[in-house]
Image (tube, rainbow over all chains, first blue to last red; front, side):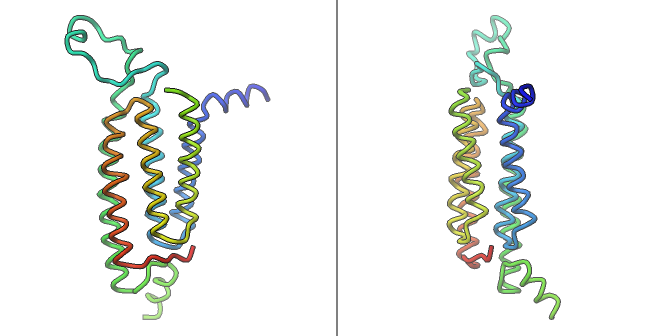
Length: 130
Length: 81
């Protein structure tokens, strides 16, 4: 029992990322309003980005900006800087996420013009009765 | 990386995420989501990912909030759940 609690406490941040991801997933599936679904998708995305960025973090690591002369003279001590590779990958993911949000909001505007509502059940009802 | 600050910010992030999907007014939900994005940006700056934090502060907390507010003003502000 002690071992399990220690194991959970050691990786507390991963558990909180999973909680955030499930909050977003619930909003995408359980909520009926389309804007709420989109907010849930954004929460889901940021939780995944947070997980990837946290894999590059180190205890006692500084930001990955080095002095040029010092870096040219000798090898860089990798224990003193965080890993910048996940940062670069996740930078792309943030930009893609915002463009997906923009396109989804444009589609929502079209849906509102046609059906006059953003609630999923009302839209489905109007499609069926047409 | 200071773990007390990390845990505090993570708690605030979870509270903001829960508030975003619970609030019935869509404009309030968007503003709370903007606060969520800013807390996320603080978390990344604290982890040493300054470039990601920079992008999130401009793009996540700035542009995407403006997109949401513009779309809500053109459609409806009320939500049933």
